[in-house]
Image (tube, rainbow, N blue to C red; front, top):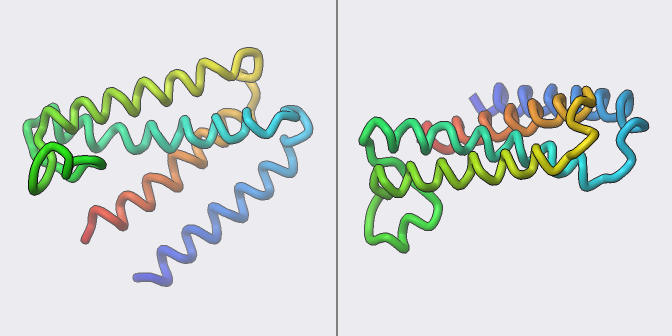
Length: 125
């Protein structure tokens, strides 16, 4: 099973490098690339927290230990999901004129895919 996860990560890394080489000349500033990646990562992280919270299920949340012992409540997960959605939207909207670039959309998808795979590994345990 570890080999499968490793193969998926290697394939995503290879595709990422290939895409970045092809489209990197269009967007010069590195901070646009980083913002795009993290917008996708935060979007992927927001979905499970928000869905579990809205459905009334308890789910592990970061900083959940501050709210008390055990797994965070549904309300804490809804709030965490909304915070992640808000930050992801802010990062995406701060890209200004580069929003329509293919590289931005591809980096958002790469961030979404990498975070989704990592979260599936973490939460499957």
